[in-house]
Length: 137
Image (cartoon, rainbow, N blue to C red; front, side, top):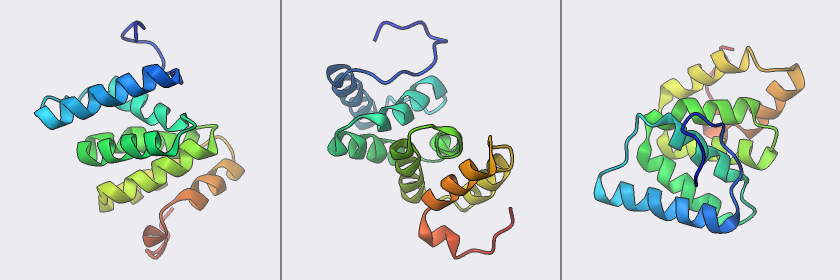
């Protein structure tokens, strides 16, 4: 991955995605993952666009280990990403983090989402255990 530091995330080739996932997993295993590196976290979310389910699962598990620092990128992915596979993976990954504040952050974020239909699509992807809560947004 030889992109500039401030570049937007891109869908990587399968070999680049595999190398990126291995790097992230190694960082997490060694306790060397920097949870403040939002560029890396956003690229992990973008990698949910990979066509391979086990690869998406690997990123979901990694983001689950990152925890709360991954929440803003996951909420952005759920609310704004054009790929429904990425939106669904973001919603499912947030269940791994299970932070109750996430629901309120998503409500705030979804109120500024592009269109009512994209808000509805985002809500459809939201974990069912959170839909049991009173709707405040």
